Length: 120
Image (cartoon, rainbow, N blue to C red; front, side):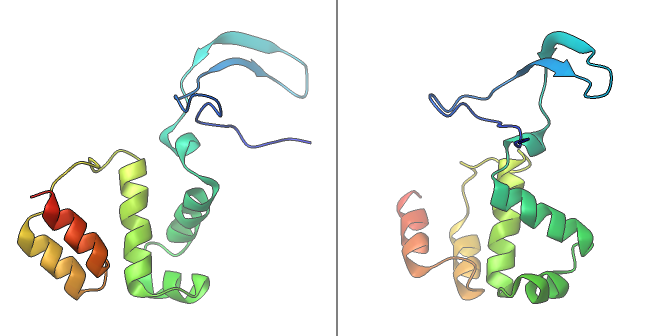
């Protein structure tokens, strides 16, 4: 049974590298140190969301409909995906106005807003 490649070590949580590649047809093996793509470090759920996002060409209304989720949930998934792919620094600080706007748009909960404001 074939399994998906793991991006992180299940023991210490550090990023993994591939050491051997093998052709299933002719059994050729290539050894070395191979870099995994950023997509290999996504969780199964994040990868599934990324595929839905691409399939729907980023159309949030279509994503909402296909996954039966709300606009704020889609935005949260997109933000999470961007962070995981390294496009946004996780420790990037939001301004008070940005936090207020996210709360107003229901992108974050009141508790999350309190936590973010506590860090300012």
